[in-house]
Length: 121
Image 1 (cartoon, one colour):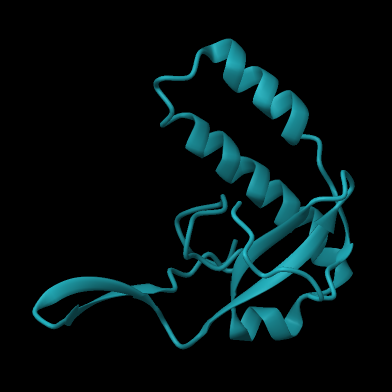
Image 2: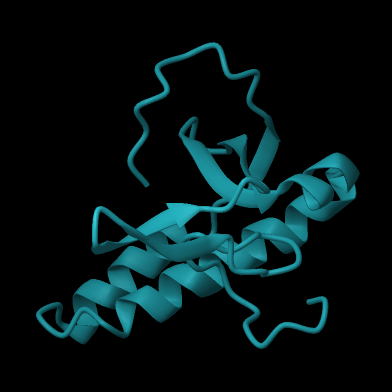
């Protein structure tokens, strides 16, 4: 982590430096959240065949290497665990089963992006 206060994946934050890439602007007299111009995405194929898209700032995207993938996956899994804490309607058993299934996933390779872009993670 590069000096920011979170060490887990959080929507709209860079997966590597964890900088918030969302800004709230007033548009037509209404507060609207928008991505900063520095926002980008990186997509990976996981060992179960699924695809995972993560937010990344353009500076970090330029420097990502295969050596970053274990950290990225660790950060994403930590984000999933953090999100499960907010699911009060889920039982602890359901949360454990979810992490047993998804908490062991690994990044296999970068995606080439030649597929449907409407992914929902």
